[in-house]
Image 1 (cartoon, rainbow, N blue to C red):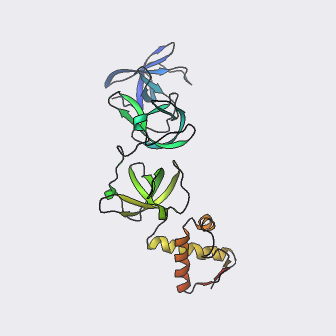
Image 2 (image 1 turned 90 degrees about the vertical axis):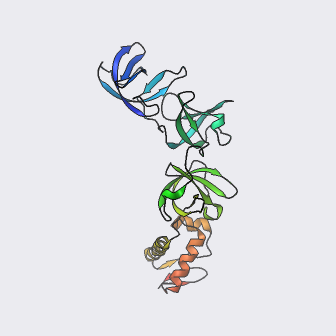
Image 3 (image 1 turned 135 degrees about the vertical axis):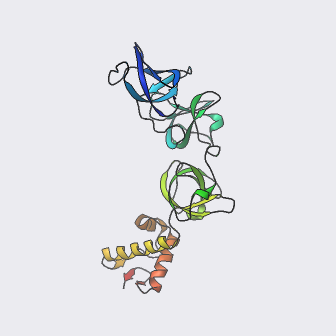
Length: 276
């Protein structure tokens, strides 16, 4: 069967002045591959193409690699905004339409947003959505606390930052855990902090379990050894300097210094840290 929004392997049925006619043995629909193509195709040969619909509803093929397939969430750039929707560059000849009713908020041309690509069964066309709740799960039963995940910043709220987790779920980074600026569309690594009683997912940018604490303590010791046993990055240093060095919050850094001090592995002064 021919599947919209996916890479299909189709057979060349014939050539026209404007391109090629493609088909699938288990589907009676015709797909048009517009010309020109990079290499001439022979009748009966197979070709792998993305299938979508053009403005007239005709099944159309592209040999270009899309930035997102149907069922995926990817960060795409808005290249045009109209009264009925916004258009996004998704890597092929035809831009992807995100209808106004599928938008989580106002879209600005030139900005990037996480976009979910899917087939609209009512129109039988591929469209996108920046309103992700109807398509992604908020049930965290699949995840475990401490699990490393890939994140895409989705939206900002009074509580914190909403994120897409592994392109399949939605979660929240509370403002207290967002120790660095996060932009809409930014991709980063994070960790599952907890699964709430209602199943919703809390995410953090750093490991908060014993493994994460031990790792940070060892990184501090390694950094001290690399700098002759002394560092001016103390618990009084600005948060951005701490993040630039260790990629953690100031609170996590202070906890790690306190643990190392209790273990008598470092000496703490106002201006410096010394390795013992």
